[in-house]
Length: 271
Image (tube, rainbow, N blue to C red; front, side, top):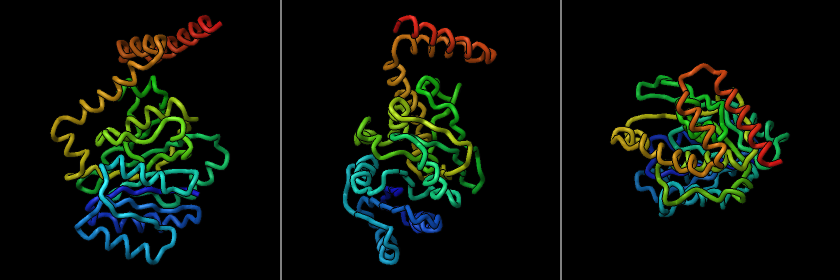
């Protein structure tokens, strides 16, 4: 089973679309867990209406400690061995959940499965397509110069058992929780990237991430997380990252050479 978890608070504008998007996936292996944080704008009434009609929808409405806390509560409720998160204002491409169920049949446990994500702007246009093809931690800590992190959880799924290895989402982190999770996940999971568009992310005015960008703090938060994981790298990997960082504008063969030398050094040191 796939457990799709939606954390929401006062999300009346999009929650019905989100619920219908999961219903229209027509995936018999999916359940939809909606964690409402005690909404007062009519969100709860919409959730209750659809939950009364569709048995795959499970929900709770109660105060929480923020998005990470709601996500962790959803994980605790999840009955599926595969987990995905769908924020109330995001949506899947048609047929994605059946595609995910099929792919996971042959993937080792735990796997982090990542696809591409459309990023939509306020004008209803696709501003960019997030294609996070390079997902080693040594790639991620170099940020946009090498590869941007997966921007939105609508485009990745993973075995629930991964949390047994890396822990849950940090309830003290309210902005970069997804980035922090990805950095921990790629170090412990089997990672597979599929060059298909699975998710859609509305990067629009009024959302938490856009407000953070407008305040000028988003980039600093992102860099802080990446610097934390960069410092945790073994010495040889830190050296590799440092050289790649310094010469990121040089021709591609330099990167391959550094990786080859680093691998040889590791082999020598480990016998």
